Image 1 (spheres, helix red, strand yellow):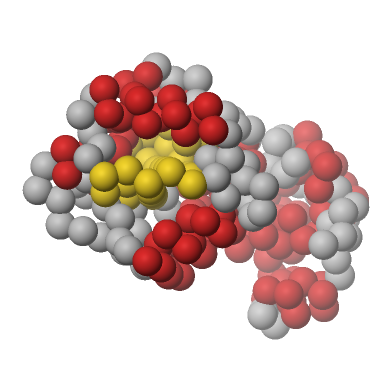
Image 2 (cartoon, rainbow, N blue to C red):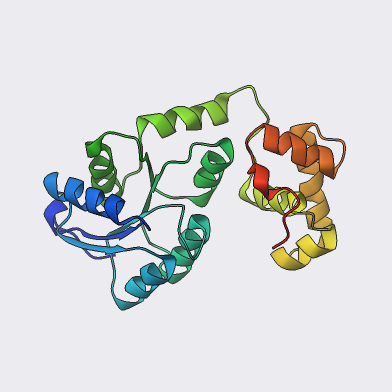
Length: 222
């Protein structure tokens, strides 16, 4: 990351596939005096190319991109720059999304229906070493962490759950995730216990019902 002396000098990378949203974000940040050097791109490939060519104080990332899921882009950014500071700007408030965002380690989350100044506040906080969750996301986070539902899943448990829902066997999951089959079975047992499931089908149905995975994930091969 660059050494930013004050907010006007921040170098920001915006990633969103909607031109109007990018324009709105740019105008909002410029109006708030938050961005001095702003690069806007519309795909994950463009984002990674920009990151290879220079360094940014902060990346603002959407989760819905045409060429790569947002969570995979976050992982790719972290591989390229482990110190990257990331704010996610999203319209998704499903439990599985909230859980994945918490697992991803991003420093900020702003819902797209937040007021215009919310993203600027997140950018300022995160760029200078802090964290920022908008009030709506903070409410969702507290509900997930403190609610009466099942214990929050770890990142690995979430990944195994998604693979199970896609119909993969223990051996396939182990190969895809570079884990031993015994480790996968341990994660599977944890998932069954946390969701009170009897078998893989029951586990998937309970996960969908509780919003831990997308309904269209069930039975999908990838």
